[in-house]
Length: 187
Image (cartoon, rainbow, N blue to C red; front, top):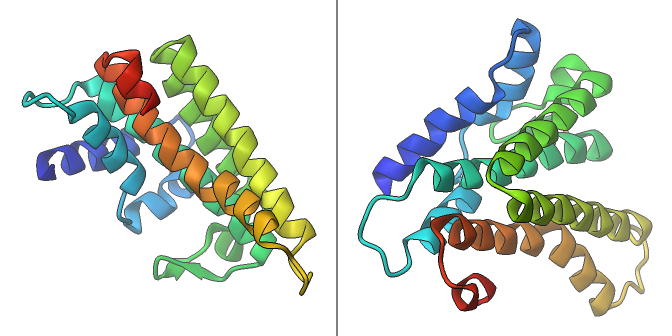
């Protein structure tokens, strides 16, 4: 798994590299700040089920697509929360402003979608649906933020959309890209 983590770190930086030096800096800001990379780990773990061989580059790319969605959502979340720091560093919005943070978050989502599209229609569709679920979960949270009578079901809708959907997608993408049987993909 350590070798796969290194592959993920390298692939993340490669995925966001582009012609514009400033956009490179914005897009890589939270990548270089570090993180647990739980979504790519989930993708790799799901792909590795029943297989002793190293996972393919496509599996790593599937994990990267999920991590980029997560990072893009963090950029947007930091704007909404007016956060000053994340992962021990200044947020993009605090350092460069909300407009650049939103565009950088959008860029990360676009890169995630581009990678997913290269992995096939089913992966691209799954990732697009998950981005929609993230938005639904965030809206649920925003509309109920100061509601002291917020129900448990409302809270569960929020965390399912904001958190659980992306973990589920990461595992499904790993299983799909690795070519597992449908029973494994749906497990």
